[in-house]
Amino acid sequence: MIHLSAPSLGRRWPMRIDVVDIDPAQGWIDLVAHLPFGIDNHERVAVTPSDGGGTLVRFN
Image (cartoon, rainbow, N blue to C red; front, top):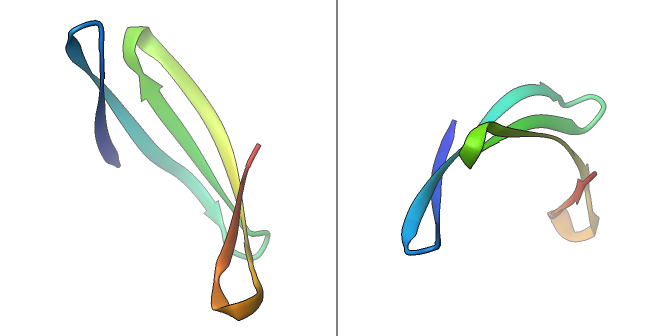
């Protein structure tokens, strides 16, 4: 769980990101970003090894 906030309209708005599932064999992470006003954004992030020992991250 990651807690964040973002400024807008003269106040700070709370947000939270939850890791829902991980599949290392397929190379993805499922996240849910809980935004203000009851908005939930479901994301699948693809991760693959890259040259030089880094990681390539792709959002849907």
